Length: 321
Image 1 (cartoon, rainbow, N blue to C red):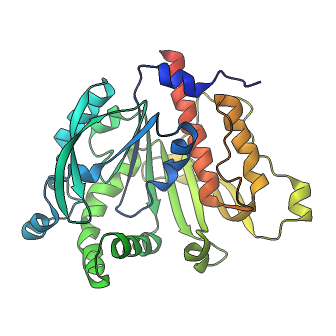
Image 2 (cartoon, one colour):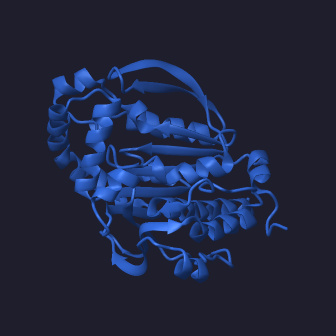
Image 3 (cartoon, rainbow, N blue to C red):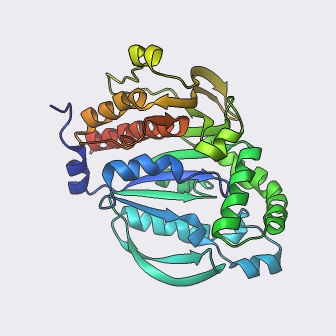
């Protein structure tokens, strides 16, 4: 029997629109780390807005003005704040639509938030008002070499840029990233750092194996009985891959945070216990995101741990309602 009633049903009946803000540079992997929330609660309860829709200028106009999308002046921050506030009140907005294929704007579309609203973009935590509108916030922070490899691959394969164009754009954006995007890290509830795996840089492109650190503030109120069980019999008898699990304290730019770091590939059973914990605490069954795979990566594990932290925040809001 679940420790909690079915939390999916509770959310469906609740008037609360729970907002998750994910900030970070372009091409930093922001969507990846909220995938577990999408899979656990499903499209009936989860909607996503990409903040690129709130660009003020299309691609050609930005070139004429010599301004990057990372500069706040190239984005309609005031409209973004107004629209999020309206969505949290249950109202429908006319959401702008930026088309990355053409670099232009399509016609606005009616948009009504679902019970969980994920907002992903460059300026998600840029203003105090935006921070207040987020019920949980994440900053995704890959090291530069990883980030630029990802951006180059994405922009060339999905957005039609040439290699030279991507290189020029990366150089143009560096100053604006340092000035306007990086400081948002200090406003996030959780920070995700991404580095190449200590077991080989090539493992990233080959099998999505990276070293991932999840930095969080100390939790003042936490749900008891959280476990990440490692099956020692399976580990010692059958496991033939390298992996790392580390806990440490790290100095963030603004404060000291607690960091869980994972690297390498692990047997699926390593993460199955965590899936069962989320099942037990939410009443949502089954949660088997990686059951079809023999191995899971650090990215997979951090997705699930982050989803548990987000669910914990949502349960806390429900208890206060």
